[in-house]
Length: 243
Image 1 (tube, rainbow, N blue to C red):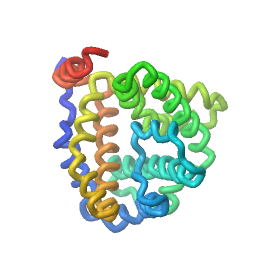
Image 2: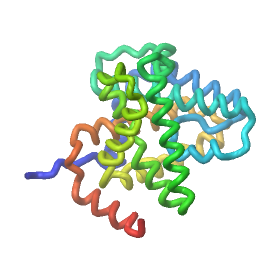
Image 3: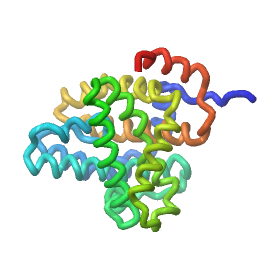
Image 4: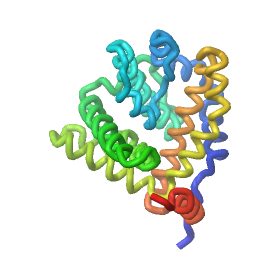
């Protein structure tokens, strides 16, 4: 059977720009809450990034921890809306409601448990060495999207089990694709520097672009679930051979 070719980081970014084209006003409105929160937090880096688990281990004041919590959850909600937009061009963005959707009953507790377990597991892996922790953070990175796609189980009281299942499914889904997501993130280094040089002003463009690219990555990956591209898997095996 012919193996489905997954999108390269370059193709993912191109697709992200296509999805954003013509919808920038509403996309920027969707991102305003977390951008403003991060500005309020004295220029903290805004946006959900699975590698940011280490921030929780540092010494932060209560306000900074609260902002980190809010921004993380709001960005997950934003990512859900971007995924809906990718899957249906007729999807109408509701900036405030969409940004805060993760705080609803159907999302909050499962998402909180997924985040908590993810931080715990990645931290435990990092106690061995930093690199295994990074690898596992990428392995678990799609758990939030997976929960959205299996939302029919939201009324199931086994929230802890659902969280574990989403993490396990993400680990399986990312087999052969962790390096591809890493390269996608590395391709944004120039944009991260631009954010720093503009004191966060460039976030109005960079964060929607990055969040859309990550949503495109998941949409592409979920479509071909169980069929990793052989060349991609080979590259990852070589890059992470020591682990």
